[in-house]
Image 1 (tube, rainbow, N blue to C red):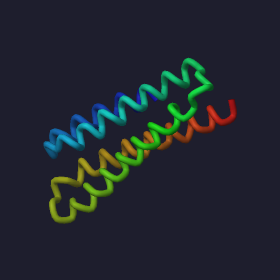
Image 2: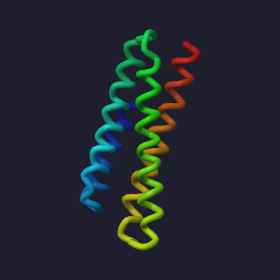
Image 3: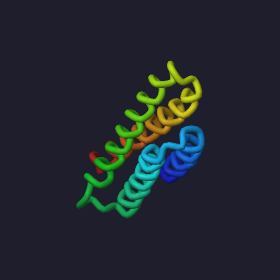
Length: 109
């Protein structure tokens, strides 16, 4: 999860450089921070707060998915947005796959 968090932060930087969208950058930073928080909860084995390990990264994944789909659909009119859209979608898929892994690890612990 830490690797996905770092890659999300790097992809956020590249997408921000392409679009200069401050809200998009904040979404990426939020997603990265929630993945780090989730990794900490899983690493410490804090079974009292499984919603922190699953809920926040799930929200971040949905934010990234919405940002990616919106940017990708807008890239029909503005072709320069195709790459940032794919970056957001890749981050969303990676984040949601981490959420699925954490969910099964926490739910079956």
